[in-house]
Image (cartoon, rainbow over all chains, first blue to last red; front, side, top):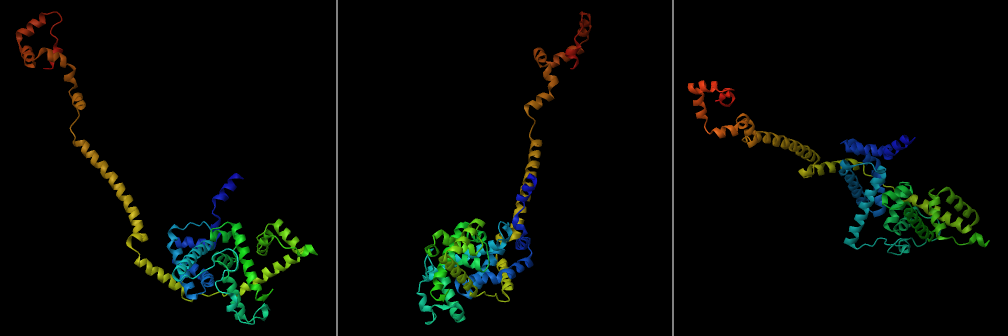
Amino acid sequence: MLIVATTQTKINPYLSDPDVQLMLRVKQGDEEAFAELVEHYQDRVISIFANILSDQEAAEDLAQETFMRIYRARNGYEPQAKFSTWLFRIANNLASNTKRSKGRRKEVQFGSGETGPLSTRPPEKNLPEKSGLMPARMLDKAELLNIVHQAMESLNERQRIAVLLNKFEEMSYADIATTLELSPSAVKSLLSRARENMKDHLEKYVKM
Amino acid sequence: MVDKLVRLSASQRSNFVAYLDGELSEEETRGIEQLLSSNEVARHDMESLATAWELLDDLPRTNAPKDFAEKTIATLKMEEQKTPLHEQVWYQQVTKYGSLLAGVLLVIGCGVTGFLVARTVPPSRADAMLQEYELLEHFDGYEEIGSADFLTRLQKNGEWVKRSSDIPGGVRHGSTGSF
């Protein structure tokens, strides 16, 4: 019984992740495995970046840089998390660094606090005049998308990435915690505040 | 009726999102469900949170350009070609094993050199004494006599041989025999 337990703890649980297996093949010099990984994740990574940066071209550049970092790190790769968690951690770091340098260059303000709407411009200015308090189904699709974008922009950077990982990647709190290097309870309160903020923002325009 | 509209605590509200995401323990889930069944404010909040979450489905999911993977790999290959020699994997491997081989050769070289040096060094005083052990064993006696020539001549002298044979016990040939 003891032997079984010891053997189980020795086995790396992440080895069952097929993408980890692909990455281990990349480590051995298999370029096809790397191409497979890129094709598997490219849309997902670009989508996350595009929603964070609101810039398709910049999103593609950052996604490419993410994959290049993965490739460069292949020789020292040891599976210590799911592959997707590792990938999105790199993506998150890149996004944070890009925003920081962008902020320094252009003095663009991104959300800075954990609570409250943080958008730098009043949301009303970006909305069609007659869109207030309408049921979602009655809003024009473009109008609705605009409102949702504003709701996302009202979040600070961490809240936004957590929401995107939660929504787009359907990541568990534990995986988001590993990606953002936070505790699961911190992720729970981060997401709670983020979604409360979005709800408050959306309630102004959409009848819920 | 008052209970049904009572405001929610911060911890109750913080559990709403986790409840929607299925991240609560069984006990916490039961607690939230009980609250939802008895509190209209809670029900409304929960519904609003769920609706707001559904609205995020409209966020765009972008597709990568068709040649994205191809371009990424091509960029990496170009980068590898530009990589300085000391950062390239093959060079690191050659350096690693090369230095190991050089270390082994150095140890062997030191051993051989040591052996050759030891062979050319003159024997020590102790070695010399061992070689001359027989002489040293009788050194005190030889020193007492003073001259080996004298003993040799004495041995060859017929008169000495004759007389010494007359002496009881005779000549101690051991003392001169080796001369």
